[in-house]
Structures are given as C-alpha cells and as structure tokens.
Length: 399
Image 1 (cartoon, one colour):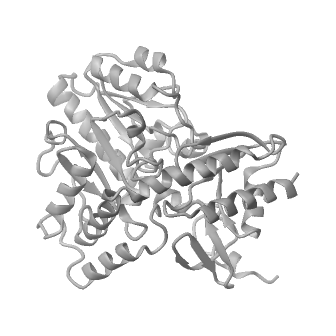
Image 2 (spheres, rainbow, N blue to C red):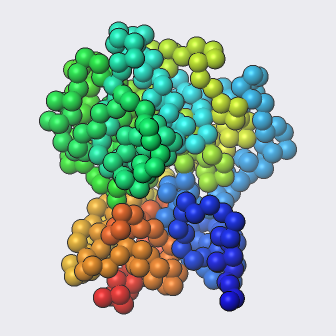
C-alpha cells in the first residue's frame, strides 16, 4: 500500500490530534502554502496565536534581532528586555504587575495558585478550603488540574483523580453564579467569550453582573483572554465590550506573535504581590527572545489599527454569515473576527472543514457540529468575502 506525504507525517507522533490532510510548508500573512505548492486562506489563525498573521515583518524582525544577542538567561538573572516587557504589558492591561510564563495552560495554573494564596493571605479563607468557580463548557487548557474542572468528557476521561477546590456553574447564568459564591470562594475564572465551546458570546450585561457579584463577595475576577484577547474581538480585550476590568488577566497565544510561546498573568500589586521568591517560577518564562517578540506585539496593539480592522472586518464577516441559508446553518455567533457556526442537516462540521480544505480555506471543527472561524486581524475585505463564499459553496455541495 502506498502512502501520501500527508499520511506519512503521522507515523511517529502520538494520536492526540486528528489534523486535516494538509502539510504546510510556507506561510505569509493570511495565507499558507502546502508541500505541493497549493495556497490556502488561513481562517483559524492558530486558535488566535496568529492574530497578526504568519511571519508579520515587525515580529520576525524583533525575533531575528534578539536571536543575535541573547535568548535565555533563566530568571536567576535579569536581562535588558524584561523590565520593559513587564511595564509595557502592565500598561496595556491597565494593571501594575506581570508574571510571565510560556503556555496558556501555565498561565491558568499560575492564576489558580495566585488566587488561592491571595485567598489565604488576604481574604482569610481557612487553609486548604479555597474554592474557585468555573463554568460549564469551559476550555482553559489540558493539564490535569484544568481538565479536572472541564465538562468535556473527551478532555477528562482516563486522567483522574482530579484536583479538588473547583465549583462549576452554567455559563451566562448570573443567578447560578451568585448562588455558588460563598465565604470560601476566592475567585471566578471565566472566558469572556467561550472559544472552544464554539464562540459562545454571553448576553449583554452578563460580564458586568459577574463583576458586581465578585465585588460584593470580595472575590477575584480572573479573565482568561488567551484566545479572546489582544484584538480578536475588535477590542483589545473581550471584557472591554462591557468596560469590565478584571482583577487578573491571563494572556497567551497572540502574545507570542505566532513565533514563540509566551503567556502572562497580569494583575494589581496587592494580588500578584502575595508571591515570594521560590513560590512560583519557570526556567523559560520571560526569556529575552519571548520578551522581545511580545514587546513588538504590544507595539502593534498600541496603534489600535488591528482592533479597528477586527471590528470592521468582523461586521463584514457577520453580515456574510447571516446570509447563509437556514437549511445549511442552525446558528451563527460572532464577536469581532471570531465566529462559531452550527451546521444543520445532520452533516458534521468536520466534513464541511474537509470540503473547505479542498476549496482552499483552512478552518476547524469543534464538538461535532460547530465550525470555528478566526482569520488574522489584518484580513482584508476581499479575503473575508472569499471565506464566506467558499463556506457557502462547501455547505451547498455537501447538502
């Protein structure tokens, strides 16, 4: 039996992904090229890690310049990029302190540890009793602690026992959240828009209500903006749509510009200040190369042009998706350049994504019947129109 290069790519890797049958060789901006020379519009953007497209010139230049200077010191020593990175990111978030890590899951684990220590040291919760409230259908990563409070059976099955101390309530139900908060609650951990769940946008006013409930009970509000933040929704952060200021941001993905993993927890001094030397750390967190690239990302965001384009092109995308026939689509949810489309008629989202691949568009399915779209923030009107056109064609040919 002969094998294709696409199949040969997965002879030796563990089967924790089921990728589409494409092998990418090059990429630039909103487009990738496979090993056969075929081009595809990237409508996934690495789950928001590629918010600025592939190989953005400013980000590549920052990485190249730093590669010729120093790439790693460990946090045993400081370096000349570190303080500026922390200051610039804190200012972008309107916060006071930054704790850099590498991956999004590390950022979430860091926020959990900080919230618990804050609960014991500042709020006075009895030792070992701290609770953190999370939401059904959440996605915060895949460490054993994080999947322990996931409601996704695929993420949980076979990985227990799990870490205690988490209470799960329905998303977008303020009454359920209010009823779950008690004297041992130290934090509420929320995605302002649930990405993995299918770009689930809460009703207007919900995040404001969550903020009010946290304030009333003296509980930290932690916003996981790993996917939703840094311009994806048409604002710098998804919480900005309701002018909500959390007590902690968790950032990742786009912070590394699609070049290097960078994550961070950003908060006030009275929150992150509960940490002491040796209580948390990372060999690679805040390394010079990561800081240099992340500083270039922050500089791009400070102009506001990417947020503005995400808002304008997001409206264009929403209008186009709203015109898809109801016989093909059950529901469409959008926030900026982020969309979840529920497929109708018994067809799987995977089948639609495979057809889109044949038509030159990269997208990804989630939970069986939902397609996620998230093109780069510098996507053009022509590219948005092409995306909608090809999605319509894929849906019609599979009916």
